[in-house]
Every structure is written in C-alpha cells, then in structure tokens.
Length: 225
Image (spheres, rainbow, N blue to C red):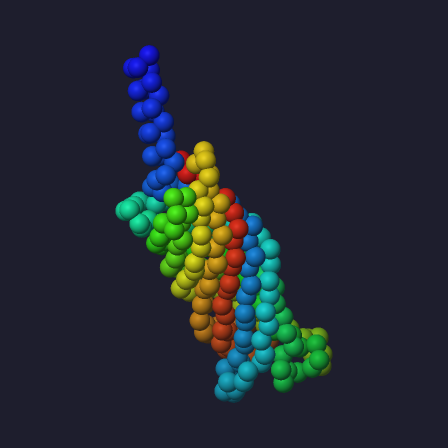
C-alpha cells in the first residue's frame, strides 16, 4: 500500500511539473483584427517630378490567424522562444486622389497574406501567467491601383511584397491539458516603399511612394505538445 502511495505521489509530481513548465512546442489559432494605415505620394508621372501628396486612407478586417512556435529556454523567471504566424486577411482601403484628374480618380490599397517570424521573451507574471514581448519580421502582399473613368479611362496598377519590423506585447495564461489562452497586440512598420505602376494601354512613367503600417490584435488558444 505504501509503495502504491509513493508511486501515485511521484506520478502526480511529474504531471504537476509538466503542467507548470513553459518549455515545448505549440500550435495555436486566434480571432484577429487587423488595421492598416496607407499614404500615397506621387513622385514622377510622364517624366515630370511631382512629389505630391495624393491622400491617405485606413482599413480594417477580421480574420483567422494560425501560429506554430516553440519555447526552447526557460529559467526561474524568463521564457525564450520563437514562432511563425499567418493571417487570412484582406484589407481594402481607398481614397480620392487629391488633385487628381476627376471626381472618380481613386487610389486603392489591397493587403493580403500577412506572415510573421517572431522572437518572444516572456516574464513569468504568476504560476500560470506569462507576460511577453515580441520582436520579429513581417511580409505581406499588396496591390496598388490608381484608377479613373473620366475625362478618360485609365487604370495604373502595381503588385508588390512589402516587409517590415514587428514589435508587440502579449499575455498567455496556462490552462490544464496543455491548453493556454493568449491575447496580444503587434505593430509592423512597413516603411516608405517606392513602387512603379503600369497600365495595359498607357506607357507613361509612373512612380510613387507608399507609406504603410499594420496593427494586429489576436485573441486565441494554444496547445502545447
């Protein structure tokens, strides 16, 4: 009887230790709210240097995000790891071209496929709580359009991939059975990017600079295995 009691106590202790550690790899899913800020500057059109501010617009979208990560180093107070995240989003923003050709001359921005590689440093705020900071790299796909119907029809377009530095903060709370809940906010500055726009008909030289940033709030669940 005493032997069985010691065995049960040992198994319980091992299980409790496994529940309290943050080491290991995990998969997760979250509801994601993403916002973008976009500003357009036309640099050159038809050989003329303009450098004119054509306006700005914001966009937001709800999406599903997934992530895979590992915590590979843990001390009494700190946890170090990395993760890969991807969001199924579609951000669409548009605004009137300030000083454009007509009242239907619009600039549009489409942002999709936001993927991030993130390093994470966490502080053990409690037995089950981890307060952490994120630092990483984000890549996203974009389509930029300058379009109008009057006084003549044109549609200039550019498709680009943009990259930027991500910073963020979050909190994760460990549950039983390897599950945990997390909430985090990440901000990515995509910077000022020079683009070249083309039209299927027109042959005009068209160069612009797009200043963009992304904000993302995630609320989700992880499973550690």
